[in-house]
Length: 303
Image (tube, rainbow, N blue to C red; front, side, top):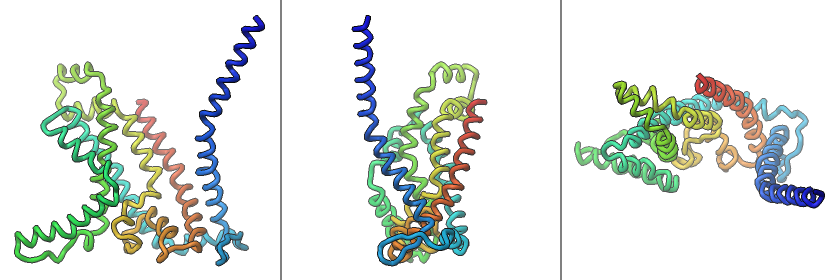
C-alpha cells in the first residue's frame, strides 16, 4: 500500500512539474509584455520628459490629463470618426460577412469563387493591399473615366473623400477571417434542423434570420465584443494610406495615438507621457463598454 502511495505521489509531482514547464513561457510572456509594459505606461502618464532621455515624476501629476482637456476638439473629432469606423467595419461589416458566409454555406453558384476572392486579402500583406487599392483609386478609376468621357475627373476618392474611401477599404478587407469562422460555425448546424425548416416551408430569408443566425450567435458575439475592445486602437489603416499627413478631420483615436508615438512630425519622446494618459482614459471608457456589450449579447444568447 505504501509503495502504491509513493508511486502516486511521484506521478503527481511529475505531472505538476510538467504542467509548470508547459505554462512557464506563457506566464513569463504575460508578465513581461502585459503587466510590465502596461505598468510602465501607467506610470508614464504621471511623468514628464526631462529632455535628456529620462522620464521623471512631475510636480503636477495630472498635467498630462489636463493636456487631454486642452486637446479635446481634436479628440472629439477622432472619437466620432472611431465610432463611425466601428459602425461600418464591425456592425455593417459583420452583417455583410454573415450574408456572404451564408451564401457560401448554401453552396450557391460561384460560392467557391466568392470565397477565394473575399478571403484573398487576409493572406496578402496589408501594405501591398493598400498600394494596390491606392493605384486603383488614384490611377485606374480616373484613367477609365477619362477614356469614357474624354476628360480627366477633377474628383478623386482619396483626395476629396478620404475617410469614406478608407472605411470602404476596411469593410472590404475584414471579410476574410470572418468568412472562414462563420462558414465553419454554420457547417456545425445539424442538417436535421435545416431540413425541418424546409418541411415547414421556411423561406431562405427566414432560415437565415430565424435558424442560422441564432445558432451561431456565440460566434457573432465574439466578433462584436472583440471589436468594441478595439474601438480606440483601430487606426483603420490610415497610416498605411497617408503616413502622418492625415488631416485632423480624418483622425481616429487609434491613428492619433499612433502618430503621437511613432511620428516625428506630431509626436516624439516628449509626447509619450501624454499618449499614455490618453490611453488610460480610453481604457477606462472601453473596459466597462466592452463588459456591457458582452453582458447584453450573452443575455440575448440565453433567451
